Length: 298
Image (cartoon, rainbow, N blue to C red; front, side, top):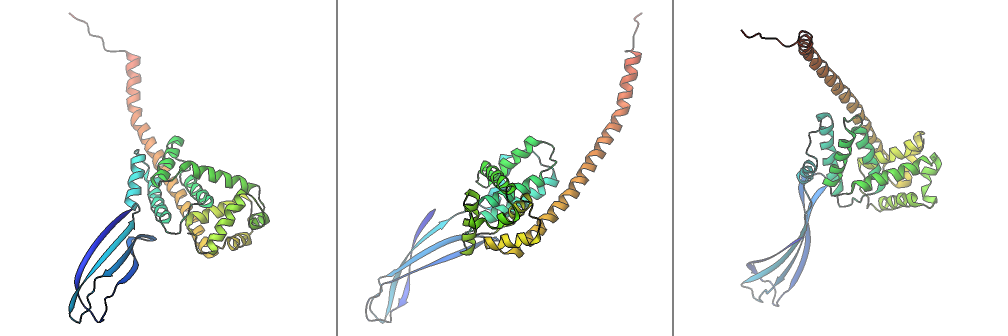
């Protein structure tokens, strides 16, 4: 948090026969160039010392500015690269970079507040994206670096996702959409989301949509009307959810194709290496059979 006090003096023409003291305050919002992210500044100005005269007089303005800085997208991406320094295959890295930008913009919206459904959505997307990654250890290290780059807790994401998955498996289509009539930890989380959404104090996101989809999937709620009822109970726009789920499905389809191409490329390169190694192996075999050349001194 920074504060700056500025004094400005300029000439003004008084139109009153008595001294005036005026106080005004206003706020300014500056767009940083990223959707949903704004740099907020508030200013208060006090006008004092206006002389009672029809002649030119001097006015002094004292201004106070307070502002709150948020990390830039570049800061978040830099944090990720510092935390995980090993190369990531492009088929995974390209999508990861898009996701971290999207999540950064969501996180720093004024109305955003983390909730377990959001956490479940991200974990679902991440696990789908990184499925088939060459190393399980690296896959988890990337997850840790990604979440920490956003100044959040990776364990909270994993734990919240696990809790919601266990809860959803015990639900039916009807019990899932009737959460508001029951008591419980997860029911309380969903009620809080519904209340904030009703009061327009909820920041909807694509990860949240995927989290809802995962709840439906785990509770075997395959009827098309269940999603509509759940969105209504949560005060969420179903059209936005449908749109984002279509994007999610499209992303998964493209990832499957990209991973298949990557696998074909790796197999092809492996075969080439084996073919190049065959003549060398043959020479080594001949050498072993014939033995090392013997030189007889005279």
